[in-house]
Structures are given as C-alpha cells and as structure tokens.
Image (tube, rainbow, N blue to C red; front, side):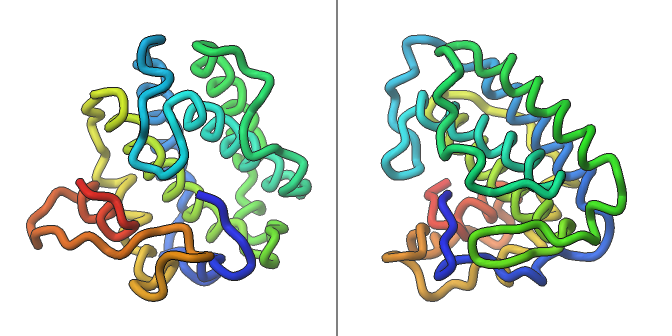
Length: 204
C-alpha cells in the first residue's frame, strides 16, 4: 500500500485508546505468517496488485522498519519501499529484528502525541499506529491468501482498523491515485477480517 499526498489517510482517524497493543498484535501475527512461507511459494501472486509473495515479504519488512524510523522522528524516505538487503527465507529474522526496534521506540507513550513526518504531512503518532496496524493486517491477509495459510485473527487487533477504516479510506473515490479498488460487499455477519479486507477492495 503506497500512500501519496492525494490518497493519504485522514490524520484524525485514530479511535480512542492506546493503539499500541493492536499494533503489537498485528506485528506478531504477521511474523507467524512470514514464518509459514515456503520457498516454492515465493513467486505466487498475492491479492495486492503487482506484488508476488517475495515482494510482499520484502515490503512488509520495510513497513516495519519505517514504523521504527518514524517513531524516532526519522525520515519516511530513509526506508526503501522494499527491503533489498534480506535474503529469501530470512524474512522472519529480519521481522523479529525490526519488531524489537519498533518496541524500543514506541514503548515511550509520548510517541503517541508527537507528530510523525509523512509525505502528505504530519500525523499524530497514535493515528500513525492505527494506519500501520491496518497496513500490516491487510498485507498479512494478502500473504496468507497467497500461501494458503489460515491465521487466527485477534478480534481486539481487528477492532482498531475496523473502527477507523471508513474515516481513513472513504468508499469514494477509488482507483487512479487511490491504490484501492471499489468496496467489496460482505454479509453483515461476516468475520471481522472479511469486513476489513472487503472495505479495501479485496475479495474475501
């Protein structure tokens, strides 16, 4: 998911409460799914356009590294879109290392109130934590779908991006500079993960 000034999420999209436990849970589950990727699956296509499994794994590593950099007041563009320094199959180790960096930086509650610097402008740390919980969760689903995994989704983690999704990404407009397809309708009683990915144009 690449954000630009034209498709930036609403900086006021963070629901009340501390979003860090949900971010931590999303990170943990993504690590489990990364660990389940097999070599013969590296070139499988994912539901995220233009990403195969290898690219998705490398992008996830970059996302996590970026969360640590931003929390420390660093430059968004200091982290590449894809991690080019990680050998195939070494993603779980790289994920664990980046996760420790995130934990170290974001353990300070003051990070939630400080603005982080994004290409489309500053965003409160709390809102950024929600945004990245959403991105990691969506890409974890993408990766799980592409590799035949069935992760156990935590309702408490999903509640955070679900509460923010309509404000963060309105139903219209979609496509073009907004990197999501039209909302995919799901049943009212659909699982939370289906509601989330459907809102972002994925077909559960």
